[in-house]
Length: 103
Image 1 (cartoon, one colour):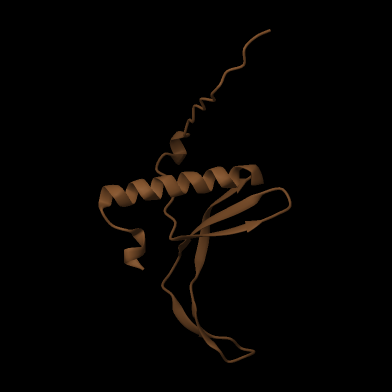
Image 2 (cartoon, rainbow, N blue to C red; image 1 turned 90 degrees about the vertical axis):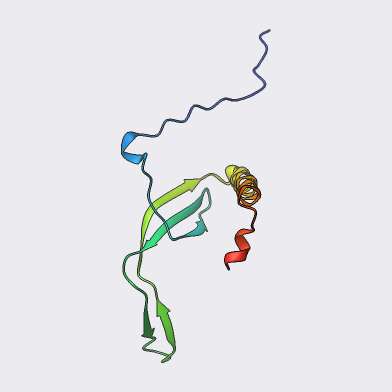
């Protein structure tokens, strides 16, 4: 009987045309039956005050474009959340401030 390895080592390669990445101002999360979807978006022009034609309510219209859509299986959501929390905590320790200070 062969012994199974105890750890996984994933080697991630970023294609050259993706190395620079894409700037995103915000992200939205939604889900389907078999995946969670994260849309990373950025503003495409300045925000403007608009008025809802039905109610007359004024609101801030923010025109934005999705720069990346990422789909992950539900089983990976918890791992992503843990990784984000660990990295945010390390960032806050290194920069001696909370990211909540800016809000």
